[in-house]
Length: 139
Image 1: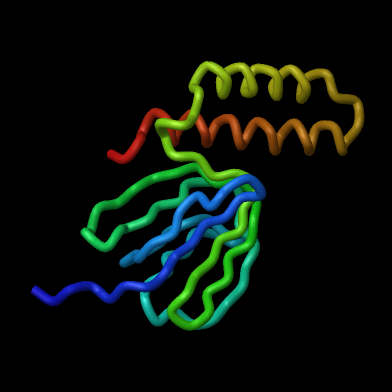
Image 2: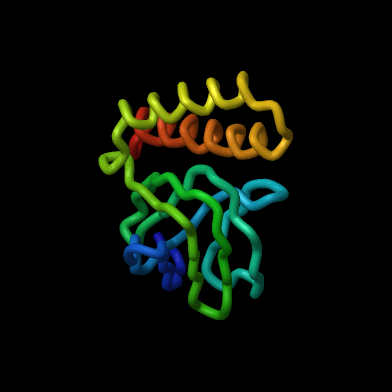
């Protein structure tokens, strides 16, 4: 069986280098849908929306994480994701995510202005995704 082609993948937040290593594949959500990046992918730069980040490591194991807004750049044999937040399932505090979910619902129900409800909707989406990543882990 042939070894899958690898490429360098890095994920940075403002606070840390979240991931740096070789990957067989990376799947995440852009503004217009999901994308899977493999070795020798066409050059591109695109905005990322909150969702699952799935990394297939050099051993063929898929690892899941939560990522928030950001931008991904695919250039040659290097792919870099810059994101506001990235968390492995074991780093997510489920109780805190449930509290954020409840607070976002309250904000949506009590908001009088469109910008308030848009911010609350975004917070609700992030909370729901964190809970889902925590519950599904790396299954």
